[in-house]
Length: 99
Ligand SMILES: [Zn+2]
View 1 (tube, rainbow, N blue to C red):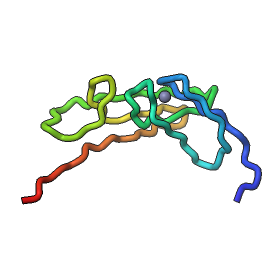
View 2 (cartoon, rainbow, N blue to C red):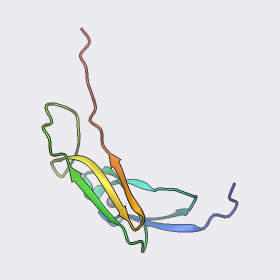
View 3 (cartoon, protein in one colour):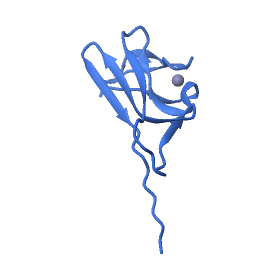
View 4 (cartoon, rainbow, N blue to C red):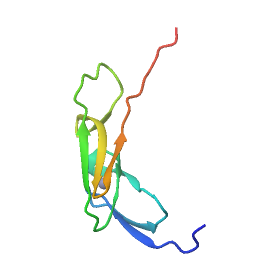
């Protein structure tokens, strides 16, 4: 247990949201971004050299319930850091009809 974690400022690259929270090992902060249709977007530590990319879905939707932002279907968000790439995937929701 960390008794006095240091505070980190998290910012969003898609809007003006900024928050300060205690930092724990391997923590990632997310928020529902008003700048990207309320998608759950990873936030980045203020000052970090990181590129956040929202990736559109490029295949046929065919009635699946997919995440949308700005009228476009979104497949994933990638975060490119100096030491690697993280990817958050928005999987479509399956529905069925009970007969
Ligand atoms: Zn945002």
